[in-house]
Structure formats: C-alpha cells, structure tokens
Amino acid sequence: DIQMTQSPSSLSASVGDRVTITCRASQSISSYLNWYQQKPGKAPRLLIYAASSLQSGVPSRFSGSGSGTDFTLTISSLQPEDFATYYCQQSYNMPLTFGQGTRLEIK
Amino acid sequence: QITLKESGPTLVKPTQTLTLTCTFSGFSLSISGVGVGWIRQPPGKALEWLALIYWDDDKRYSPSLKSRLTITKDTSKNQVVLTMTNMDPVDTATYYCAHSEKSSGSRWFDPWGQGTLVTVSS
Image 1 (cartoon, rainbow over the protein chains, first blue to last red):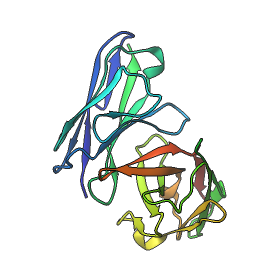
Image 2: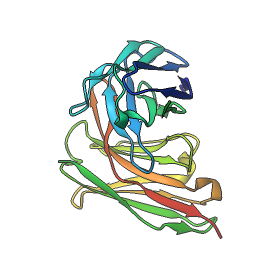
Image 3: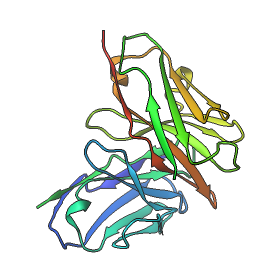
C-alpha cells in the first residue's frame, strides 16, 4: 500500500495568513493526488484533483502543486470558513489511501 | 446536481452483518468512467477507503477488509449496496458513499453523501 503522510498534523494560523500543508507519498504517484476539506460533523469536500486542478466552485485562494512524491496545498489568504481538517488522497494504485489529516485551527 | 445518501442501521451487534445502501441521483452508474465508493471514518480519526464499484461492474476492495466486504450496484434503482460481515466494535464509524470520476488516470470522490454513523455494540 502507498502511505500518505501529511505535515503538520495540526496548525494554528490567523485570518489573512498564507498557509501550506504538505503531503508525501511513500512512492511516486505521478500527479494522482487529491485534496479534501472536512468541517466538523460534515462530509469531506473535494478541493483539488490531479494535484493542481481546482474543483469547480472552490475559491481561487486554494491551490495545489507537486508531482512524484511531494505535494502541497496552499491557501493564499486564510478566511474564517477555511478552519477545518484537510486530507490528501492518492489514486495511483489500489488500495486508495488517505493521509492522516491536517487540522487547521484559529490562532 | 449530484446527490448521494446513505441508509442503514445505526446500531449493530458484534458478529452481525452490516448492510448499507447508497441512493444517488444526478448521474448514471452505467456511464463510462463513473464509480461509487465507500469510505469510513472512526470518531476522531482519519478517512479510510473501503470499496469502489465501476460503471462496468468492476469492483475493488481494501485488501485489509476484502474478505468481509461485498459491493453491488442496481443501476435501475440508482443504488449501491455495501455489506460488511462479522462486525466488531472497531468498525464503529461514519460510513460515507461518494461519486467517483476520473480523468487522465486520476480518480477522485465528489460529491460525498452526508454519512451515516454506525455503532457496533452489544
């Protein structure tokens, strides 16, 4: 199985900050990497697919980059509604695997 | 607009079989490239992929749970059913179904159902 490791596990930031979350795969996964946002008590929401493609309806302050084993999710200017948990997911190989999550909290 | 909704028991006893139904609208599971997946999330923990069924009835399972899982589809009813045998308290989780698409080899889940919390307890 491909292991997905996110860092940091948790992060405190302020409204307006630029934030970067990293996801590392245990082997190369090309660009087969997706990012999700999950708020408490809610289902995950797709933000970025194929490493860097912004899902329709997602604000442009979210962006994704990377290929191979190292990927990043960047939020250019944090908004109050962005405080949530973020997960990466690889689709290069079965079984599909998720990272352990990064909890983004208000400073 | 694509929507999905999970249904099934909220409480099951250890060793029982869990049957969950995902009822969806806004897409057809007979269209090339389309799939429906199941993902679960124990309270306070990360997401775990369980199973995926494709438009052509190809089925994929998490290797760690494969012996306990069965996924089927009923295209005429717009439903996907997941069964999990021999339930244990560690299987307590919110179970989600999600629409799956792919492009250029990459596959993602969007949107997701609201999820259903299943508790395993005697």
